[in-house]
Length: 247
Image 1 (cartoon, rainbow, N blue to C red):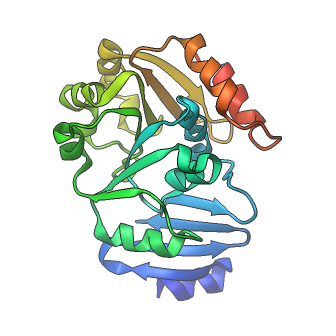
Image 2 (cartoon, rainbow, N blue to C red):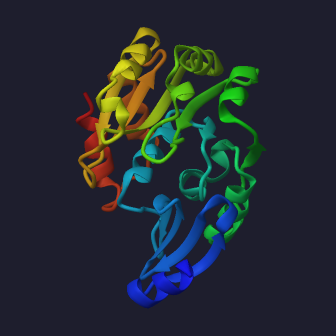
């Protein structure tokens, strides 16, 4: 029924439906979109690695090291690791953690090609708590509807993420101002107890920010690495401009 509705009224081609997890993959003009519970979780555009939305703003952080080790918490369709691999290739090593096996199955349909990452199907909270690996970058992009689940905002998770980072590592958080965090801003206060926290604004969406939580690098040292190693193009210029303006 959902498939017929989307195709008839919106002109979207439904590629996949997984009703058990309420996951839908659709083709909308030049965009490929993965939705869960009618919320967009992943997007890719034909002919470009850039989505012109929040996913793009994680991409420069893969330039934090010449050969960074990255942990992505929340695979969804795989937009973030896919973009990083397309730009940095074998220079970036990525582990992605996803709890929902149906989401993993959907990502294989959503992505235009096989994703070259190490995949862990488990609870991301438990993975960060138990891992003995050290990462240069941890990306937190886990939502239940419009909120980061409470356990990923806890002091315990922040401490575990801090421990799992290298001495100059970064925790990057997809942060929605429309969620309940607006009313309960404790998460930022907890982050600032362990990290130096900067905010990068998504120019395409007022209510979406990327929190850059630096363990050891100061602002200029962090930006210098991104300037040297993140490829420059007309499509990426606005992203780096946001980083240069981060506060």
